[in-house]
Amino acid sequence: MNCDKNDLRLYAVTDRAWLGDKTLVQQVEESLQGGATMIQLRERHLDRAAFKAEALELKELCRTYAVPLIINDDVELALEIGADGVHVGQEDLEAGRARALLGPDKLLGVSAHSVEEALRAQAAGADYLGAGAVFPTGTKDDVSVLPYERLKDICAAVDIPVVAIGGIGEHNILQLAGSGVAGVAVVSAIYAQPDVRAAARRLKALAEEMVAK
Image (cartoon, rainbow, N blue to C red; front, top):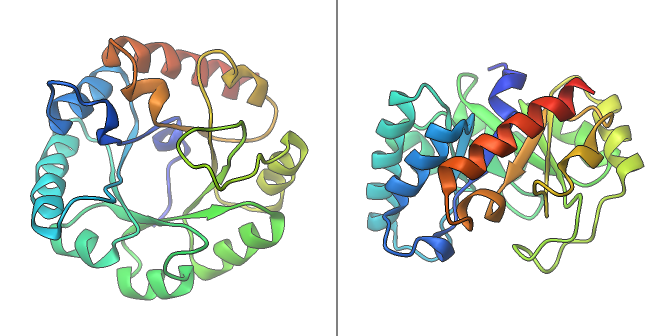
């Protein structure tokens, strides 16, 4: 399945850390209203029944906004609920195996930190790549920063779109201009903000400006 570059422009990755008095569905809807173009449900601490229930709710929400829903890591759950695809990291299920389980009609995103990993993921059937961390990030403390030139090399080496991830916010997103990325994946830059909708709107505009430069 081909991944539309526009779907990657503002890729919002969920995190329960900043929910406050909102539900995850309410928070995600605010990000969709602000212009998020893809949603990834990432849940590391929910039991399976709760994860599935949440995924089903988000699937219906994302369909209302015609935005793809990606499940982090869990191919089985993605197939079970009819999500649009899965994203796997280098330490997760091998990309070729994930593609075999998903079949040809679901999106497969794969994390890549080098040209070699990017080419391997593309050959295994990835539809898009997540490259990073492009800036220091508090979301993952075991990831080194990916230099701009390597990000550029990754984008140039593959025929599939690349989304930058890691430490991206309004203050630095335009530093990625000219790298070749199709968009940005963000967590706290949207979901940790007091006004999620407004934060998404501003980031979407900046992402469009970044890609156009």
